[in-house]
Image (cartoon, rainbow, N blue to C red):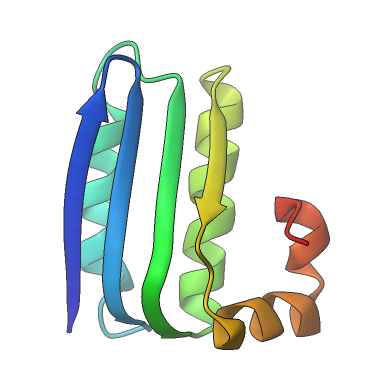
Length: 102
């Protein structure tokens, strides 16, 4: 199960995720993110991953899709507070470079 919380400050939206991001819930997350990204004027999207304990390949694909959508909207996408587990997965897949994760 995944929990999502949204906060907005002008053209910036921060989404906080809690739980595991897996094939079982990426559809739900994708639909909620589509709804959020349809809002006019969103220029910055931040995903707070501080309470995400695991992410699988479908979750990684979702993150790539979100970033690509923000690029097409001339916006920015970033992730903050990645857990060690999620950082390790990003590094193993090479996505740390795509997302600019140190």
